[in-house]
Image (tube, rainbow, N blue to C red; front, side, top):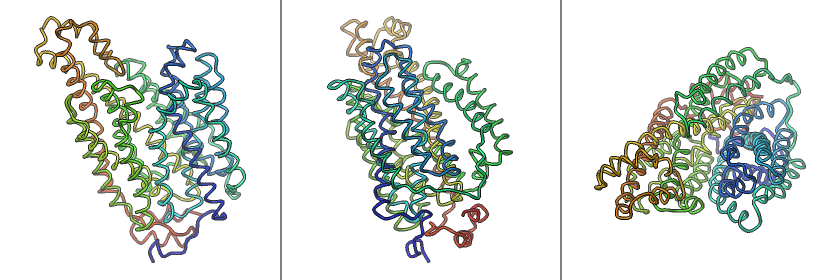
Length: 546
């Protein structure tokens, strides 16, 4: 009997209308959390000017990602122990309180602290929202809805910069945060009214305090070190030193978890091949997703002279490919009950799209780069839906939240690591290519040497950077310098994307060789274990389901 013909038996039974309303509320909450990763960027220059806090500029974004990344797996485990409803309500409430405090901030340190609180709320929303879908729908049904979550990320990335700019220019930057309050309140009320509590009365309610503390202590230096890599060398203690400290504490964390009665990140999950391969694949795919979403807008800003908001819209082809493929892939998985071939094909699309982007040059036409972005987006989209289905299908129901939290965590950390490595390749290539390209177009050696010695390359990071550089160049050479900088910057971005290409190819090989194809469950219970054991998959972990 196939997944399509088996009777559906979701873990949690609710009225169909209530289930739809819960789905909408969860999508709204996730949309707000994802939107806050993009909406703040266009408002930051105004915020920094009014609050006189340029020294804390990057921390407004960094602290949000830091607290959200660290708290995600912890919330996922707590939702397994105490139920999804209280945890997601705590997360949405913290997010709304953080939003209100962010809008009311009078000094930069207050805004940074409030953004950290927002991140603590978002850390609950991301994994638990996906886990709620795992509660309300069987694995055979989830594909219809998991694809919508990928679409939410794409839409938030699309409208975030424009909405942030509009609110800042016409209402005030405070409303970049206040806009969350009415929408979030509606989501909170619906979740409170309709989402049933999911309890495990037979399980110990012990909280892994030590594991949580060591987990946070390990991740904070790693993430801060990777963030500092944008401006410092790997050998700097604030980069390499922090990362090594974090890795040492990570080893301690593994030791602690191996002895905990209710570990926040159960090590048994990693013995399940479906889950371990999926975590490795989303980690590697994060290299490509974050690389494309960060590097390509910089090309539009420097080479085409686009504003930050315009460059956000110019990656629409990538987001269109992502949104459409995410939704379609979820539908295909639900209808066919198959996911392995779709994941392998998506990894191939991602590899090809990123490989094409390494051909980026100063004179690359817009139709060319649009086509490349569509291909890459079609590769990224299915990873947002398919791997969630795979992990939730293979994980014991009692560990559904922890498994989903681990998935979102590995995706986020993969992107952060990929950006750090790609940024290093980009900076090194830019320093090498600028003098070479200046000499190639005929700029005098003296001017080339002066250009390199002035550190002008560091001004090319974004909007208006090239204009600052050209202001110090004699007028007769500005055309040649512009051409050389465009080519050098394009080649440097191409170099930075090679790490994403390599990661995507490894993900392709890993999924093609080691990802098993488990039948999608149409019900929950002991009978399911026997059905899944037929293909040689992990019956022990599946049998552990309720």
